[in-house]
Image (cartoon, rainbow, N blue to C red; front, top):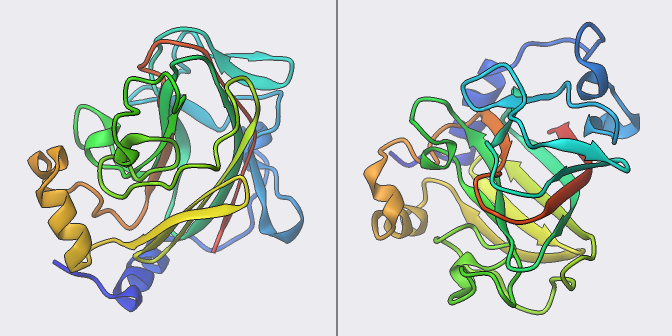
Length: 232
């Protein structure tokens, strides 16, 4: 079913609970900043995160020098809260041959979050195994929409990512450059999903609201810092 932007807006607003974000067990994840920004990771707390289908943070994720880091294959991190229309910003640094991703509007209906959630790909484009096509290089909407080359920083340097999701409209940004945009539920989106591995899961990319997730189930070093979001 194709949803118009108005339909998506109505669905998302219908799921929101009005009221300010306040303290009470949220730590960094419940802090409210100027301009409506909310910190999901401020370098000191993982209160805003948990594992997929579990209430605890998977072993292997740790805070080192103000960065959320891992060195090996670990479980995915999932936001405790769900988001519909949002602007997400964060910085990330990946190790040699590294591979990861940022998922959004994910659900826990399937065994893996990437079976429901679109993915912003994180990759070492030089040595990462997924570098054979721009469909799976850094910044791509994984396996669906390619990212242009030339915007990724060298391995070991910090990259800045921005994801904008407003209704059916989604944008991927990398280091101040807009890489791509697409419309969820459009004829183009549906055709790309149908031709991809995601056609096995009927609800892939269909939730107007869901969890964010940071992929951990690939080997290699990965770090995040200054993760913040504002709802639109």
